Figure 1 (tube, rainbow, N blue to C red):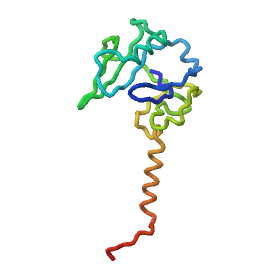
Figure 2 (cartoon, rainbow, N blue to C red):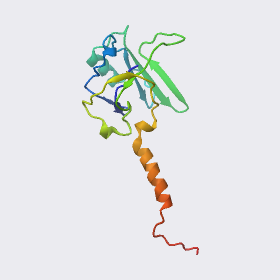
Figure 3 (cartoon, one colour):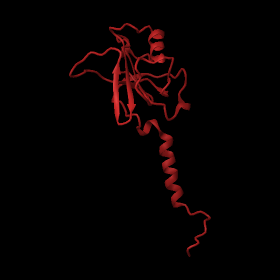
Length: 156
């Protein structure tokens, strides 16, 4: 599974238009894509169908779209074509120079971001590398608690 730099919403995803030049990817072909959505749909969304058409990966024998729907109390997976098996053998290709998830820092994502790929362990969606501003805010909150301000103590 290749995880390029990206950010998105429940309606669209923003990927780099520049593909990785990694030699390891030369003999591989895209098999589809996986995305999350806030609710289950009875059919593929317009965006999914448009992606299949625009990428010319619509060969039903090779391409799947895997959706993960977050419904109250559950998480539902659906695929347009899935091969059932007890196990899957695979690996992750991740960007070698930064995170794959730009959802918490979309201003850093560029339309033609250049990246190369490496074999690696996929960092979880909420990993600290994907949201450095949150941790800076946590540090600033801690520092603010130790600094005494100009507040009067009315209980003295």
